[in-house]
Image 1 (cartoon, rainbow over the protein chains, first blue to last red):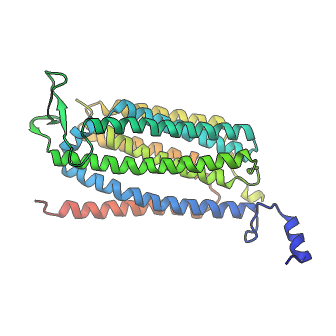
Image 2: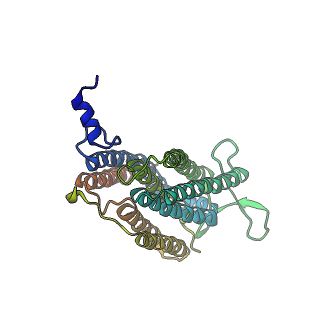
Image 3: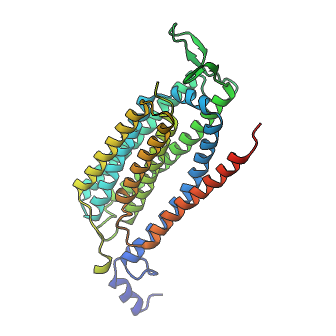
Length: 245
Length: 98
């Protein structure tokens, strides 16, 4: 039922402004606060895993160092750079949405999607290597190192910095369990992020975002930056421990 | 509306933050190959935290967030994560592991 007052009310504001908000800035702040609350929950979610990592790293110190050295540092660093670049394209997209620059918004959303897919592709190559090397926890797990004198020959690994102690297979397996859980959950977040950005791209293509209404781009960007943040911590903790001679 | 006017960062500023983040990535990889004894982990975590701070303050626009409530949520989430880690480590550190 539309009486004249309701019709006048509809005409008075932008259709993107929902009725229970006083103005656009209140609506934007409410949406963005909701995203930050979700991100606070994500901090606790990943925080539990980082805490588990910390405890096992202290308990199985040398074994974690040896297991970490089997990760491909070049691919890990490349992925870090890919994610930082994607964060830049995301802030460009948010800026473009706020300033009503349609083609810049579309280009940056597409670039973000390409970089996100590149990250997952590189991650897939790393996972493949781990399967080939039998470093995936489970029945076929076998952590061996290449013999220093005989390339291609696999021998039990030593603890870095202590040539007399061999790596405990079960302790190395714990490192790879944490590695796959943490990077796997991070990759799942990336997949969800790519889904979100595909949706943002479709909506941006339809011209849904204007300088007055661009909250979805902004909070989608918050999510993407958070996923980047998690990787900023995962990279040194998983790839860079005990690398020095 | 004027009191809610948002601070606008320029595109050049974002590129500056991006260059800093890239440089920090290079520094953290380089530092990992130095023998700093027990300080390797500390250096890696300090660099990671510096990068995270830049992302949160400038890319996620927390520095100029209109709502103080948002800042309170960020501080609360960091605080409770530290509580989680501190209490777990208090347990781990004082437990007689076999």
